Image 1 (cartoon, rainbow, N blue to C red):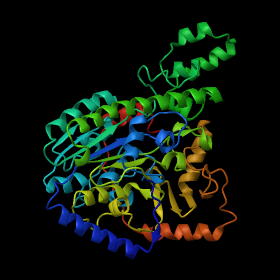
Image 2: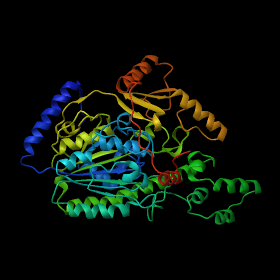
Image 3: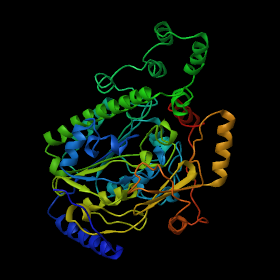
Image 4: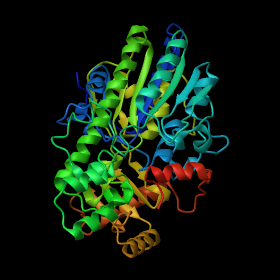
Length: 494
């Protein structure tokens, strides 16, 4: 049965949350604390899951998980980059507090406990299994509080290879409270789903894209294509470019059919990841853990597929990049079939987990625990939602239907100048201020900042009140040269 939450004053919400915590503590004398399985899927747009209404059936296992629990229709990531968002998920704080504002960067703020540290102190067995090198415990700084942390030896690891140790670890710890953070990387570019998922959604091959992805050799391409000498010369040079330059910066001039092909491959990656998760969910059932485990599924950010002139990248903070899935299942405590409309954020995940674990919330947490809302339909506060661009180059405030994006003027000017010199699209928002009415314009196609100066000023003030310009922001720890090189292979860095 779907439930749509109401909005009341923050004080009422705080009182409801306190009552929920006290009742949870009372009931915890009789019920063992739950296992916690936190799954983060890299580069996963919410609107490409069939659970969120996508036309392709990309996610039957996640659809089933959502039907058994609660799905948030409007969930925002902290940032458009992996390390900042994951640090927010695991600390319950914004980038301005934890200091990680880019990928690569490492978390190093002393005295700011992570979710793993809190659960470990409460007697949980803890483990992390990541699938990209820049989330290894050394570069990311996220190893604090984990008894076991399974790094990636290469640049990235397929879901199959991350699921194997995850399933083994859960089976070994099924008789005790456990916390497993499982990160899966597959939907991230390059889009290379394994068979049969590589052919599930494409309607036809796309030769130029197949060359860029390494699915077709250049020699075979040129033998099969009737091209002039000039066309051959141009394509020879373009095929030497990495994916980010040829596709992301659109130097190759992506056609509509090529974009559809790239999207279909991305969807194949999602379907593959979902299938692998289905095996993990089956393990939970076989081990009798469905009623004893809180499963949380989200993503660090989304991906653009031509929206706003960006292709196969996540360098903006428009909706296609910031809107992520958030699904929770805990059969013992969460009623099935809930689809909640209230906007939520990455900072809400850690306090929610702590609530279900029967643990107190601390003042360091920036978010709101969602457990009273999910389990009891308790009122939820009216509040703005915030997000940031890499290196705080831009920021987003959403309050009600209104969403403001504003860029640092000096950054915008520098990036646009560099883009013109290099003959590429700018990797920053094009104007200093953009205002959208998300309710009537969900695709952010009509900037109405000029005709709504009062709303722009109000949203800017909300951001300034939450993040004062003179506040000290801790520095994220830089990473080593090896990690930087691996990130360049994935399309990060300029």
